[in-house]
Length: 316
Image (cartoon, rainbow, N blue to C red):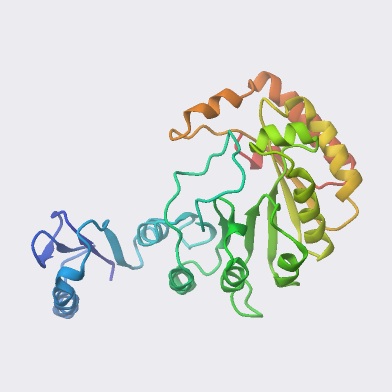
């Protein structure tokens, strides 16, 4: 009833040897019955026929994962471009890292080391896979910067699913590439929202926070287009050494320029320090400083009707 199959270059667990040092491993909650053994033999014969076509440097992958095994683990192993945060019933969030490329260079970026980009065909197989494993999970499309992919609109449509059964989908972006044509192509009236990074509304602060120069006007215009099109937008504001004194002014600027345009919320977050980016710690602010600043900015956003998400919903 519960079985996982894996191609591996490591032995361990019961396994059926294939060719050279490649093994078909299986792990279950009981011994295989005759039907299970026959099914395993069929898979083994198919893989033997592939022979030298099997890459010599492939990573281990679970091919199938059934019932009693952790849903998140089976999905993460099968699709290395995704990260899952799901409960036992497959509800929660699945993050798809569509690209490692980015048009900005935020010094506190927490994205992992770039991987190769999954193809549209691979993403289609992924969506088919989770239809039965985690049909209620929200899909988050991120990067890098996902708008650098020319097929992003197709990916959004694929993630949403068919009309009448829309899945919640969130696109995480800096909005710089969201020109009128691009925004007009996104589907309207469905469960699609945008999580847009905006760490400053003063050009100099924005430039330092993003490692760029002169992109702020394009980012603000992209946000305006999303709101005008009727898409819900959550502004992601990462508090760091560069913008800590600017938070309330940022909230005032956002309310003045964007507050009346549509469904707009704010999300304040503090930094995380992944091991692969040791210099992120240079941007940290002490909790004794950041706590009152966050509370004041959160309170101001509430006063101005910007629907701030609870501070404890972020990485504090």
